[in-house]
Image: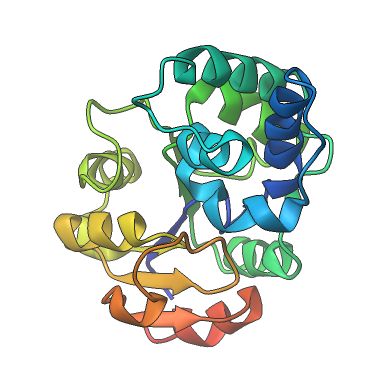
Length: 218
């Protein structure tokens, strides 16, 4: 195996749904509303504040209260972003396998750097990742190819010499636009759009452990 492997963060590398759901429920609490189960938020976790506030309060970006609620949500999340967030079960074994074989791995996420850096530091991933590209690193986030192209550039690789793993249609679209092979992570949040089978990924992995035989194909 010689390719670098790049991972989306939320829903692929780490399960951040509990902390993001808690932040959304705090916004509900500010309005004297009871908390909702994390399971209701989970499918929309990859859509960020827009998706989570849609679940929490039925808001869209066109609502007058959206920006206020978004700021409350983001501020709350920033203070509590690593209370319950952990690597998905089996993912540490994948990372250790890559490291053992001298294969670089990195993170390409649409999450802003203000959240990514402290989260990776708390999870002790900042020293292990060979590259980290955040949602505000490049002018255009995914599904544009810019973040993946920048990750490849920083690694000194051609885009086709890396592999991208993600749990959202935007991840696969970004991979296609960057001419980078993709694996869809079926254990992730997946969103509410097209079925993962229709995304056009080169492969679908149902658990992190499924990644290891797929990586050997490249």
